[in-house]
Amino acid sequence: MKTSCFDAVVNFSPVDREKPLDVSLLIRGEKISASFFFYEQIQKEKSECFACVHPRQPLLLKWKDKFEVHGPGKTPLMGEGRVLNPFSEKISQGKVKKRIAFLEQLQGDEIEMLFALIQEKGLNGLKEKEITAFSSLTKEILHRVAQELETEGKIRILSFTPLFLFSQDSLDFLCQTILRFLAQFHKRNPEQKGVSQERIKKRFELHPRILSLGLKHLSRAGQIKESEGKLALPEFMMTLTPEEEGILRELEDLCLKGEFRSLSFEDLRKRFRLSSKKFDKLFSFLIERKKIVQGKDG
Image (cartoon, rainbow, N blue to C red):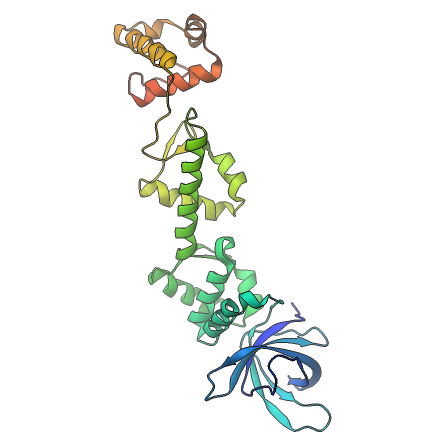
């Protein structure tokens, strides 16, 4: 895929970093006009700078592609550069530090590059097609690097074919976000048993594998519980009104006397004048307190 904007590191310093620099790129034997917009100077002793480059025509570039920079007219060679991020975009001044930190990581080897990309993708995860568009690394190298990062505990490999990667930092963030969402839901809806997975899917709008990973991680860690298809914090208990507490005690008495089995759910609902929703709530309490073990079908 061709790009009309990329980030690079060059081995020369501009006279005025605040102004764009109009030059020519010599890349793969072709000379192309381009404008350089410099982020800021780094490694002053080496005079290397990060820049966002806008070529006059779209180019097919990959990570660490090399190029030469020539001045206008017959100006001699100004310096050389390497492509770091083939697919860049204009950012506000407030995001420059974050962009530079990303580019610094991309100056490293393939392990640092891949980890930087995964981190940059955040909760979306990094797909194989995005990696191959970004770099020229072979599938074998990508798999090896991904496995090294997973062994170090930095990422999770969600699939190998095609490769789909997710950072551990993003997983930790997702889990904390889910826990906060559940806590807020319980606070607003103390009468409900929990949140359906469908509601969580709509709330987070993530790739199914990523959301599944987060929920399974929380479940294995004992940080969430599931009952009747609803997810909740392990310490959460629905609240009951005094009237509901009284009805629940009567239902528990029926269970203890063995009379519960002889009555249908419809009979019980009518006997206590309960709506279907309220009866389901009390029924859930009976299950929680292990007063009954049979399902609604008997």
